[in-house]
Image (cartoon, rainbow, N blue to C red; front, side, top):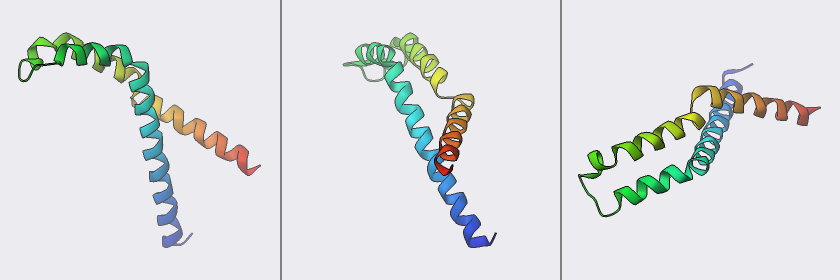
Length: 90
């Protein structure tokens, strides 16, 4: 495989990974909507005090988001994507 072909494949892989990361984040936000709403409610009308006044809500939101946005989730999405692509080729 030539350098140009390899560069193209790496570029495609990066684009696919970026798309999968975006999809992962969208799903996380949807799944954690309740915590997002609680944090937004707490933060409403605050400026600097949001840091200490909404610490609990921020922690809950981050814990929820982390369940859906971690390396294991991304690797699983990559496997699923690869399997779907292989099925298309056959």
